[in-house]
Length: 138
Image (tube, rainbow, N blue to C red; front, side, top):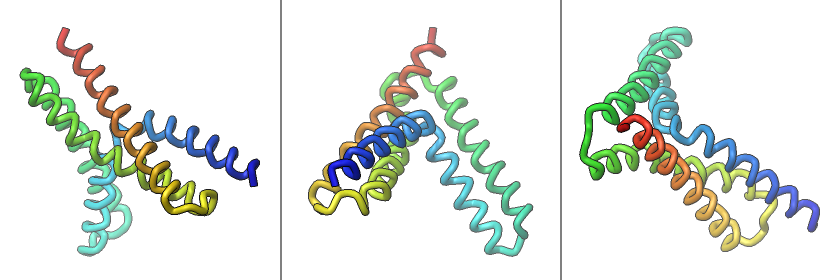
């Protein structure tokens, strides 16, 4: 049982690092997936839905870059960064919940781990976005 818990902690830590690396792209990716699902449901076919989703995701990421280049006040940049960091925190919460569902028997501890993982992922995405704005504003 101890080995299983240690493996779960190591796996959660590894996936949090992965989520940290990909957290900036959580909103464009999920937007692309949802647009692709909508396009597929409207009858565009698998390839058409994939292309529409890819364009929507790229447009969302392009909008992030354009907003960071255009918006100068720090409070507005923080608002833009939060719009992109909150889905990353939700993705981190869901990621940790999916991993710890079978490994952590206590619901309270599972939720606590999920909140910590989601918070760390969201804060890391926010810091990563804030770091990219500091380098572009010089």
